[in-house]
View: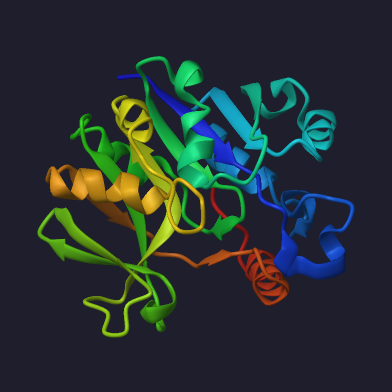
Length: 242
């Protein structure tokens, strides 16, 4: 089954203070590149040539100016505007027409990690009708969504639990089968007024259709000033593999 790439690069970046006053956080530098190059290089490095980038209205022109048609990066880029902050699941819903019956590999634009995507995609191809998530062993799992596993399967995800059932955090790497878009249409907004990716994942958990791959190398989000510093340090010391 064909697979298409989706980069979610929206959000106001309010936790970054003055750095994002006039720019999108995904355009800030991580190592030698703008942050958004990292998810793009992961996708193209895995042989994915059709990529959709979703961002807000304010900075879409900057992404188009930076990345153009995608030719220079070995892919064909499509852009979709998320009019207001409506959550990760809503942003993914904008990819329905773009994916047209393909599976989608979805990367959060501010997640920086060392491992290439290829092993994860290869493992996921064995279960084309399953959702697939990336996991990373962390010292402080209570800060994240934490996965509970049984053999090859994810059987539970708890958000920021007081008593984590494992030390495996859910990272911003998701693969979904084509039926994810009909599912998103049934979601109700959360208390934050957003369509939550957690609800998407819970659907596949209940159906017994969620697998996982663990990342061996480093992983961090780069959505705060501290984590942006950390991401730069990690990338300088040990460049990511694409």
